[in-house]
Length: 450
Ligand code: PMP
Image (cartoon, rainbow, N blue to C red; front, top):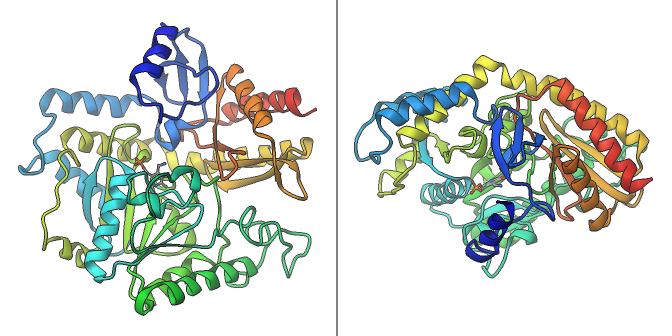
């Protein structure tokens, strides 16, 4: 029963677990964009198990492929060859541009980023690594250094050689909310129409990055630079258009390799492109991916160039489960489903529709300070004062969020103040689901904010 489950949760499971909602929902079943609790109440899932269920809960084709593999072979380790991993590796690297052709499979995003850091250090011979404030790259004791959000750092020193540079968030970071030089009616960074290469926010953030490399890194050498294409946990933060590309160029000119963390932004979620980095017109040296890659099955990967991978050949590196037959069969079926279902196109169409509807809702409620995102990676920032961008009080955010749940809508939450609603559903949602979501949100805002 629910009460028994809560007892086990408090007695036998670690208190470090994040619990969503005052009275957590107990989910029993899922199908595509829908979830059912133990009382058979249905919810529309707008958070997809934290941006993980990419093609849909228990997607029939993926489930069938998993079942087929499960009857044949579960696990061998990579000491032996097995067909599933080879078929899958070829299929996955075909999705990547340029020289990104060598894959190492792991089980989680944290493992993938840990390995990417190791690869970059081995290849460049340089220990120094750089990430952006407000980033989330993982929860291992080492990655808590690269993860530059204080909420997710505790009792673990920032790893040796790890540096963080400016929060490049045009809404909340330094310069957040400042007016554009060329279009004073607009906030700099994301919403203004500055031509590429001219946004002051982008220039400012780049200056800070250059400053960090010049003043904090021995011999001005940077081994690795990590960036999400849109910061996820940090609150769906979109960088100014002219930031990441010159940042990559700067890091490379100082000896470093550039790592795109595509854990949330990959696999078509942004709609216009399969990978988030493509929206910045860059090709990374290393790409890390997790979450959506396995639609909920533990699978992650690091993909790099043969030249960088070669260095790893000088050492043994071991991961018992990485890319095992089950994971490979699931990963392969997820790629097929994305192709066959037109998932990326749906992200673009429904995502654009959703963002437009949220902007209309913003006209009705002052509490909606900002609507941002791309495709089906959307953030709605709640404020008590739009002009000052004052974060909305936690109890009101909590009430809105609980109300939405009670009306059958599960939404994520994040950002530095925990005041950003995160909408990152399975990418199969429809325009009708969007209309339902907007109705529920309107009612929740009416209940708490009028
Ligand atoms: N990178 C990003 C961008 C993430 O959002 C996350 C997880 N929230 C991770 C890495 C770490 O992934 P995992 O939880 O699978 O270790």
